[in-house]
Image (cartoon, rainbow, N blue to C red):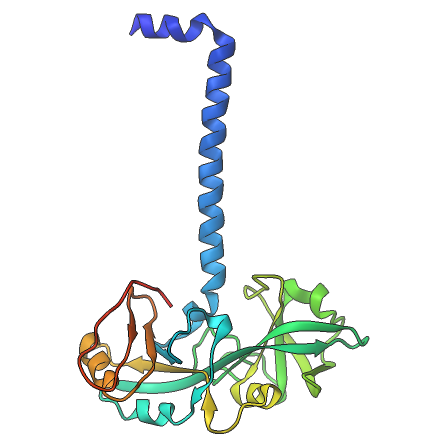
Length: 252
């Protein structure tokens, strides 16, 4: 031990440089780990805000921001599956936003039913700001410079449709530099030109007393779609026949 200490203090300059290098390497590991954790939380914030246990969408969808329309009748079909307590819908697509001064900006427009989740940002959700119109929109306060709204309510355009921004929220800011706008599902389908027979995400809240795999098997007999479980490492492509086979872990 004494020999090791003498070897360390023999060349103090070398010892200082070594300590500095190791400390910097540890700092980089902690910084990159924190950055990754922050990215993951930001990317899954809307998924985590929902109260639903299962999300159903088109086969092959890998991210919330790049959904594909599916048949709207899947919501009614899902409601008839044993163990499903409640269904709701969510859609998301990029749209052209025209600011009050005429400048255009690409935004991510998110529409959701009022029962998508207590924390899900929607103008008609329980606990939301009172007194807003049915066509109201919400934006995150961190995106104020991108949205260029100085006072509320603000009359704007989304995909050449008149819209009204009437409230602001916190914690749902832009992840990749594209600001989010939140509105009701009915309002979003009008802006995005979705037909009444189309949907994008069908959310299911299931009975926790029924085993998850039992409900998944029942759903697999109905849907030829991808189903993701929130908070579980499971991603399954559902086929019309046969049991559900979990694939590679993917948290959606």
